[in-house]
Image (cartoon, rainbow, N blue to C red; front, side, top):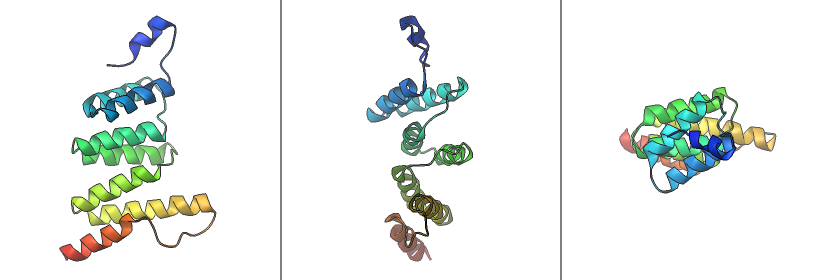
Length: 141
């Protein structure tokens, strides 16, 4: 499943080619194939960008592999890859829907820290998902 055939055309697989292949698989809901490509990308020593991570996390959520999705998110942080708002929103909504309120709150804090760093100062409030997290926690109490 890796992009080995690319060398037949005088091209070496790179982050962009893997990212496009992962995005294409995700777009047509071939989530297992997207994750296989993501794993190949990492095995070949190619660093995923935030979009490749987002598509891999989306595939994990669709396949109900929340542990793997969380692991990918932690790898993003370890590698210094800033998550896009959509990635954090997806993880926050998924955790909230599954009753993982503390995890969702931690992700909201991550979102707030990331936005604060982008804007050069403290962020007041948080993403729209914060209201969902708090409402879900209150409803389950």
